Length: 576
Image 1: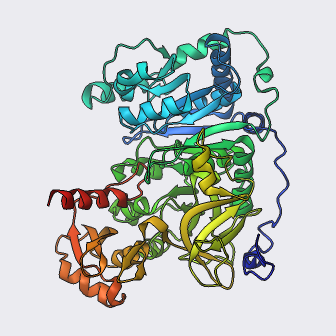
Image 2: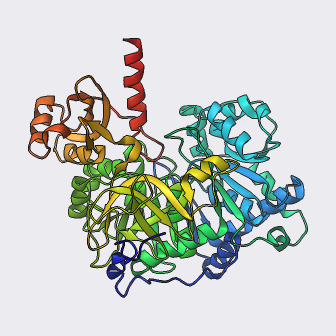
């Protein structure tokens, strides 16, 4: 329990809510996500809901009414043709495209549980997730058919629905885009599986009779909606059980923080992050769908030039991204010479935003780049910088409404104000637990609190700053060194494009700091990097090794994978 004298019991962050952020939220008025989607379709039916934009500017769009009708048809197909039952799991594996919202909402309307799957998974990773979740069906893009075919027999999947990236594009445009992908870029492999193409599944679904509402009868906010697998960056991927209520509450919490900058039915949000990732899923998809926004979907933001047509051809008012995405945009002349004119705000998360990137972004666009914090297990948003005068840059902001946060030591006791401690939180957005993993669940859910594994500090005014992951902390001669701090210093050098810092074994100090750098200036030297660091870092925090790389390992959303760099070092030491 939190002591009444604890700084966290006093909730000093409430002073930043002001008149624009409610301290308390009314409970969601709908029982589940299909009801939320139905209400959005009723209110915004004729408006464009999604536009998928290819790198050359070709595009396809669906209205709210079209998404509603198509997802209804898919629900009928899954229940009437596939004979799935309420609670059955259905995997979704595709990049950002028009098929994604149709598939996701269709699965939920069928009363089934969606299993978001990274399309870039290896066949082995796919097999683990499908077997672990018990998925009985999958909606997959044809680009990854060969991987699915190689492991299908190992899984319980009996129904394969296949789609294409340009599905639902205009008849003139679709064959051009698909032809380039299949014959020029050779992105569509051959396979020998028996599949049903998504348009055919919709046609069969439309032929089914029956009341759609019966599929979700009995579902409520405590019912499971989504198995969202953790990225596996610290071990085997686990399925976070997110309920309809978890996600509905997090949508309302996000709106509580941002509604002052969102006009219903008028926003245009750029979605470069993948919708199968919880950040974009909740913030870009669910929240913006709830508010009647037009969602500009980009199948892949790499190379960064893939975003150019989307940014130039549409009146973007909101976008989300990670530090590496914003950093890459700011190094493009086409972006900095003609920055978007209508952006109200940009959201950053997934990894720490670097000060130099935030400063450069705001100078270039004139729009705030607000950082948030969350994790898969919290649906994901737990903290966000307010868009009012209470904003504090270089922090993760303040807890979103209805969320409590404490910082604790290894014994679970509150740490003093200003001291680093593990961030733990509770609120209506916290998951039920990990799918079929009670031991792992018990390690992170204790007495109603979610233990995040992130180390943070709280200032007197109630704003929080992430220091680093507990597992990433470097111990140099008994002193704690946090990679985020070193990386932030490194990226302030104008010649550094990207940086990652890890600890490596050292005979004298236990561990030593090693920096990996991608150059923004070809003339950059390790001597210049170290001279820059000496001006801002005390001796034990200084990098002992500086290694230049052409690129750094990243997750699909652009988060740098320190664990892969550590694995390289440990593998090399074993061979030595």
